[in-house]
Amino acid sequence: MKHLSKKLKFTKQKMQAFQQKVRWLDEFKGFWQGHLNISPQILHRLKKFTLITSTGASTRIEGSYLSDEEVEKILTGLKIQKLRDRSQQEVAGYAELTKLIFDEHKRIKWNENQIKHFHKILLRYSKKDSHHRGKYKKGSNAVVARDNAGNEKIIFNPTPPYLTPKKMEELVEFTKENLKTKELHPLFIIGHFIGEFLAIHPFQDGNGRLSRALTNLLLLQEGYSYVQYVSLEKIIEDWKEKYYLALRKSQKNRQAEKHDLTPWMEFFLATLVQQTKYAKTILERRNIEDELSEKQLAILRFLRAEKMGLSVREIVEKSGFNRNTVRKVLERLRNLRLIKQVGLGRASRWRAGK
Image (cartoon, rainbow, N blue to C red; front, side, top):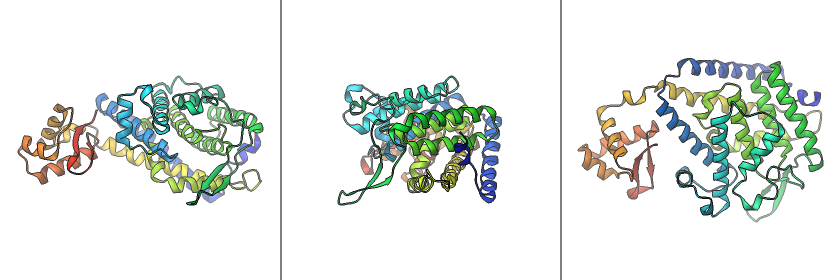
């Protein structure tokens, strides 16, 4: 498996930059563990919020049209027979897989069979994909781009089907061995695994979504516990153009000696650093409700008492506060993820988060 380790060799300058980011991430991991003083109720709420956000973002990256609000509605009243289209089916599968990883990551074993099982869960509700769930690809799955006229252009040819089992066996074993020995930092190994996994593209469909779920799993198993409270998928969605650009640059000349994983590793570590910045804000508001003003607490209580939510006008009437004050309070509570807005314009309503 020497050819795999070669792809983790970077220039001295790049390695120094990467190591600086890795030190930051490890320092924050320790900081998070040492300063986590948040009530279980708030952590539960954050975890649920992240599940919804991650599911919405990861499926939208692949072309889903559902907003986070629509994702939440599907997951709250999930009934298999009501999953009418592919976007809804992908949402249900990704949410189920992510919840499993968040809840059971300490007991999940790292091997090929587990990865195939995850693929089955990911596509569980998609009838169209029933024939290849949990199985490596049997046919070509070249990555194509379509222009406005509908013309297709191949932008990347993954590993051919006949080589996929061998390449996946090597990659999974390399990852398992190096995570165990710690000779290379785990973040380099995880970044390498995801970059190579996406280059192999082992399954007929679902590779992008599965790669993001596996990222969460590996990070959690290596002790980066804050990832279940801050959506990495949302960061990738926000940086979608950079995401695809980094992949294409790293996948170019993949079979040649000059193959370079540097662009992907730069992107991967940058997203992890951004995730810690968001996680830090959580620690900074650890006893969040104790820090709310009387007006903020009052409006939060009104919203918690009304399951259907309240409009701005109704909140003004109930609270006796002027409209401008109410809007400022609502914005503050939304930024703290204690409430959410449903709908747009005059028809919008505000509800307490769960």
